[in-house]
Structures are given as structure tokens and as C-alpha cells.
Length: 256
Image (cartoon, rainbow, N blue to C red):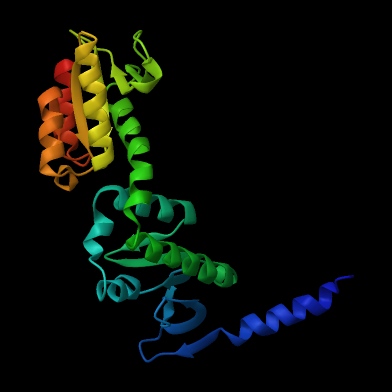
């Protein structure tokens, strides 16, 4: 089938334009209704404000206000979600001011900015309902980056000891240390807490000289029995990756 470029373009323009409306407001802003919407059907409200030399496309903080009705938006300001939010805004070249997301453009750039901001708000909405499994998937990346910032050049990832079945008992990270080898484990979940307990117990059985540092995504998420077993074989602990100062203090005390 041969595609008619002009016909398809006309159809798309007609359909998209039908979903976009611009309304004047008494505060001299323009309200832009777009096809973007929340899961409950409410459409994103974007606004145009005149600026010296250009135009600001903004949501006036309505996205976070809408999310606050059903979700604790403080989650967006802490931990992994906060880092992902910063990444989303940076990639889309969207700014934030007191909860309002916006893009400053020239008048000719308004159409692209409206859709760019709309896509960004969709990603932010998805982020507010981020599943724990997705958060955990970023934990090790964040942990490795933090370690390299604190002790650059002294971090070895997925370290294998010269012991039997070494592949089954590797340390997440080996840190160059002043004394016994320092093995650091990231603990984002109960399953990883249990696995780390097994690995450390194996090191003890194999009479491996070592010190350990355990960094949790959130220690409160680990059941007491699992935490107790882990503490019996593990060394110092950091309750959360967000406790940067605690991690840095304990790590620098042991690192070479």
C-alpha cells in the first residue's frame, strides 16, 4: 500500500488540533488544553505566561497538587525517586520553581514546548507510583556512584575471592582498606539480606579474613529476624543510602 504523505499529514493535524484548545484568562495567562491526561481522565492544564523576550509554558504547580490527592508527593523529594525526578527534568530540559514545572521558550517554540512539558509531566506522574522493584533496580547504580564519589579508584565491583564456588559467594564491592579486606554489600530487600547472610557465613566457614559494611535501601523494610541473623555475621551497617554522611564516615574510617 502506498502511503499518501499529504493526506496522512492533514489527518494527523486535524486530529491533534481537535484535542488542543487555547483559552484566554483574566490574569493575562493563556490556558492550553492538551491531549495529555491523568489516569482518572482529568487533562493536564498547561499555561502560557508572557516573559521578557519570550514565553513560559508552565503547569502552575497543578500536577503535584493533583498527585497529592492520592499519593504522598513527599516521596518525590527523597531517595531514589528524587534522583530520578532530577534526571527526568534534566533530560527534558524542564525547570521547577516551588512545585511548578516550566519551560521558557520563544513564541515559535511554544508547540514543541507544550508537548515536551506534557510528556515530562506524564513521566513525573508515573514516577510517583514507582513500584518498589523498579526502585530497587536503581539502588545498585546509585550505590556504586556514591562509593566512587567517596573513595574514587578504590572500588572493585562483584569481587570474587579465591575460594571454592567463588561465583556463588561474591561481594557486591571490595574497597581498598587499611586492614582486613573490606567487603561492602547493598541490601535493597529481604531476599538480599538473606543472601548476604549466607555469603558472609560462608566467608566465616572458609576462614576468610574480612571486614564488612552493609548499606540498606531502607533498613526498616527488613524483617527483624532477617536483620538479626545478618547482624550476627555482618559488620557495621548504614540504615539507608540517603544517610550519605553516615556512609562516608564509616567508609573513610576503614578505607585505605
